[in-house]
Length: 138
Image 1 (cartoon, helix red, strand yellow):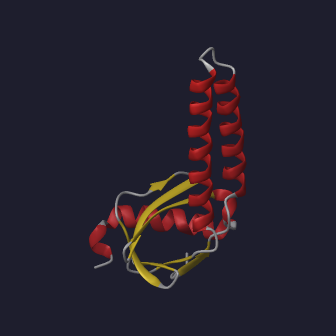
Image 2: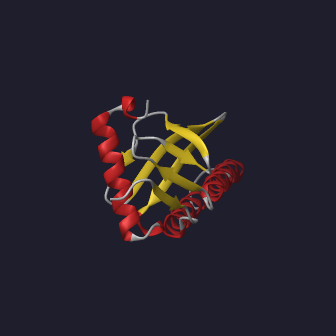
């Protein structure tokens, strides 16, 4: 793996597709409950509000550039960032809780969003970062 590793984050289409299916299923289940219509409408409205919030969060991260450095540093859109908690690194999903300036991010990156060499590099960098601890960047 060559560092620094620069990653361009596209919109997570596969994750968005699964979320559409999940929300549609939840809306269908809410519509078929035996609750009175006002309660059903309230549950469905809350599900729709949640779906809009999730879609906004996913679209906010699309188009971002992240650079992973040799000493454990991270840049998000050219600005220094830092992990604020433990990152999740699974073979198909990575979740990076970042803070860049005043803004906090929960970057959700799925394996289909990046080419294989970049995906493997991201997972290797996260594992290396977990082994070296937070002092690696400072």
